Length: 612
Ligand code: M6R
Image (tube, rainbow, N blue to C red; front, side):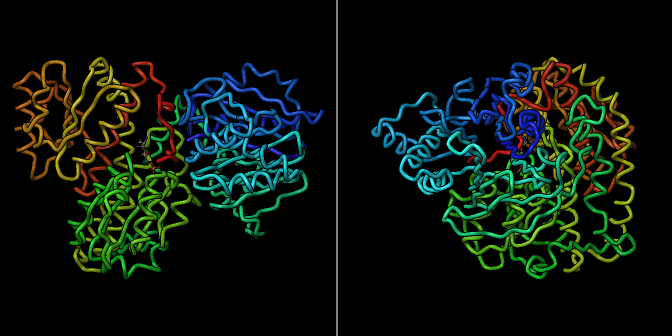
């Protein structure tokens, strides 16, 4: 949700900022801009509606020579995407430029106050209010750091900001509250980024800013403080991933790369955490609160979007394997319904980015009410990862495609590990069962690989179905959330309307939609619900709907019923959501590309939703 880059050092800032913005573009892509302090110590800006590539193509690089600068790629909250609302925003005198990720909630009150003081506004953004507020304080304090501090103490809401000014041309001021921001500490240079992808090709040494902190950067170093002016010392940390992990490596899209990576990413999730001889799972990050988790009276899982779908699978797994009651809540609803939290409740928070504002708010609410909190997070060092009582990283690696793919399967894998850990301790699964599960897990990467290798078959089916306007996805039990996730994937990247339902619910309403134009994707494993699923298929066929069945390899029957069949390797029931999800990711991907959609940057979306 908006990407911020800043550079101060000896090199030309513009190229570094543009490169960083390209890498952060998955966070928002409706407009982009840069401000540089040029060699004459003047503040110059170029910003534009559209993608970072358009900004880069149109900017006059000769004009923008300078070694201090900031840049932004926007996901609009206040004001439509256009050149004026693009960031950087300036103060009325055009002396201060600021990039912002977040929302200034009291901007109307502040704007009225400033208008009464004679300030004039050009844009519809909340950010412009902050720039004028800094200008207002600068007039009396004559010090940029103090002016920013005073302004930040007056705003309500969330921000990650970077600010430069021709008043004090040799510094950048950065601050954060609720929106991520980090510093890459290079040799005689510092790069500011909303996340590590903007920094990694310059340095692996980083400092994460915490909420309520600001930093003054100069060519000689940096000073970290709270916005209350208290000094802070923070250890430098090392980024764990490499540059190649955030590059396309020859794939047409990040999403395709990320789908194809799953045989490896799934192994990264469980590697070193399960003993394959005994099936015993040890999650190092949860050791400190393991007893509390094992003895939980209830587990509440909270998340948004795809992560919420993983949570629904977690509910089935934990209830079946551990006999602990589980509730799954949309994070965005959780804190507004005054939830009941009792002693012994554990909240599991699932988030790829670790920055989703709704999920973070639910986590804070649960903590306030006394729940012990557990994080299943992908991005190392993210806010949720740092605020939970204990957590385990899912280790899917950087996910750049806006539509989540490999993070989903790694989230499910993490939930399986969590359930196995609890079940092993509680003895709700026997030693033999644990061993058999561990044995089957060994074969999972190979099975995922088989699914990936069949991608041309999925492409063929995608071509056959690409013109449909509506899809229905059906599944039962553990595969019901897979149906939801399949439908979400198709919706977000191809803009085709799709609904996921428990298969048996179809007859309670959605069946009214079915006609010869309606493809129905149905997950049909050979398990105890198979006959019922076949009946659901018959119901669709009787209404001329087209069936695409995701069926087991050994199912010799399914071709008699389905128009299209995708076969997946046989696996243990608990791994089925992972296996069944892979073809659905490909199906969405190939339908979207066949329709000419930009799968990595679907319209209106952003990878990390840091506003509520
Ligand atoms: O980073 P998070 O897992 O917290 O994000 C949650 C959702 O915003 C995310 O899963 C979203 O639904 C994706 N676009 C799904 O592909």
